[in-house]
Amino acid sequence: MTQKDNPLDHECVPCRDGKTLQELFENYGVRQHTIAKMSDMAFTVNTLVFMTEQELDEVIQSMVENFHIELLLGERYGLKVAVRTEKKAIEKGWL
Image 1 (tube, helix red, strand yellow):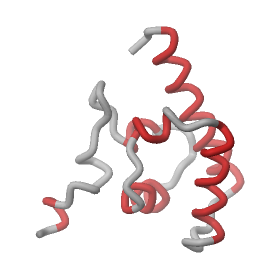
Image 2: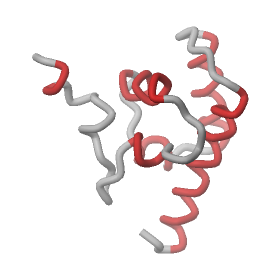
Image 3: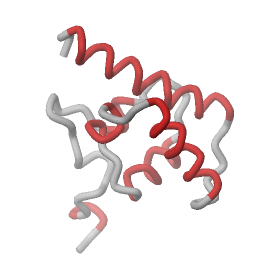
């Protein structure tokens, strides 16, 4: 299986409305490397949006402690804000 065929590639796993992790975190200061790692960990937009705040905090903590991903402070906030914004858009029916 080539990298292009990998179903976990962050550009190949869209959510219901077709949004990828790349699009979710666009303009939120999350680096490509971090997005790729999240995709490797099998996260999708849907899985992140339907997490509670506590679960999202645990994911971020796990990325740092267990997977040794160095997240910048702005990235941590960017991850949370992007997910919150997407969740709010879904709840309000904007998507």
